Image 1 (cartoon, helix red, strand yellow):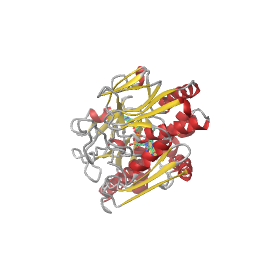
Image 2: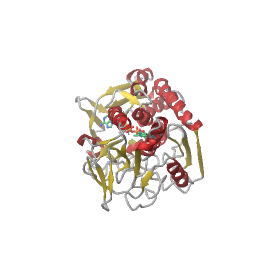
Image 3: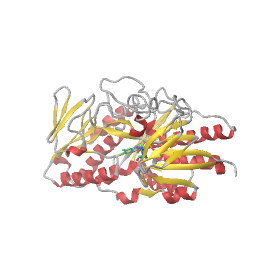
Image 4: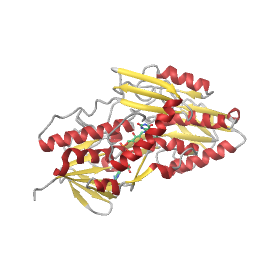
Length: 407
Ligand SMILES: Cc1cc2nc3c(=O)[nH]c(=O)nc-3n(C[C@H](O)[C@H](O)[C@H](O)COP(=O)(O)OP(=O)(O)OC[C@H]3O[C@@H](n4cnc5c(N)ncnc54)[C@H](O)[C@@H]3O)c2cc1C
């Protein structure tokens, strides 16, 4: 029996699941594919803001991965990868199992770094956040208490160095929608604090007229905002900016800066100083060319410096495209057929939802200067995003073809 090519994928989210499915399609039975994921389930993370508002049940957003991947003859291992040895070409897991690889795909996302804003770590009890179902459920309880109170002040935003500010915009607008529906909006102050130099910067130096669109949206919703906000610390009743400004609060929901996953940071020369993986345009590690990186784990430099650090977002749509490109390039290397593709040319679709209306954003490519930009606003995009979630969960269950209509 011919020895098969061994591909190990670490991470079972947008990057990892799509990489595994695409590898199976492109390599058919020429490869043994293993997915190692610390979590047994795929979670549709973009819907977590709806969970926080009490509009969506968390258990509806999960897909257990073992069966669908197994149907595609992908060996799913629910374990933590603890060590990568690029010389021996092995991944070791917490249970002590060693997985040899010919190609490794790292879709390990990021770890949350709260260290630059003392008091902001949710473990300290003041701040909430939204990266996991557990965090979203805790935030949901806090939001429900806040909304049921006699009135109060919430600070929603991002710490210096954050990249993933989109959900903070969504949460501020959704909370406004939630309160207006209950005719209690007049009792609450919503303050948005972001390190971005202007609203709608999104870590990509803006997208077309997005800045003006977002300002109009925030003004019409009576959302207050501070840009260039260098959050310096959080105390139980206030957030303090580096210039001494104090933002009083009864509730805080913040997005932290990221650093690369621990297992990446452990490998000499694999990650940059923050643990993100520098790659060539084919998504191969610049240090270890048989290691590919996709999604949030990839190092992408900001397009322009900002007064307060802002990092580049890597969205779900981008992560999925990178996964497809990495799988294509691995298949080219294995079979010797076809051409390598540019995995860093990334057009992006994104829907920023407010709970009643949403903003539809299409930017090609995601960093300026761009070939095209489409910005729309309306209730239909809210429903598009709802529909996309349903489609995506089915896609993960059944390996459906990619469609990018409502990220
Ligand atoms: C609240 C919120 C809303 C969002 N909304 C949108 C949106 O509307 N549209 C959009 O396009 N994007 C959105 N995003 C961004 C999107 O969720 C990310 O781009 C996407 O999750 C990135 O996928 P990934 O596979 O690169 O990494 P992740 O989703 O971070 O997954 C990494 C996975 O790797 C696993 N892992 C890490 N280290 C190890 C290890 N050592 N061993 C085993 N497993 C490991 C982790 O457990 C995790 O499951 C949103 C993000 C958030 C937080």
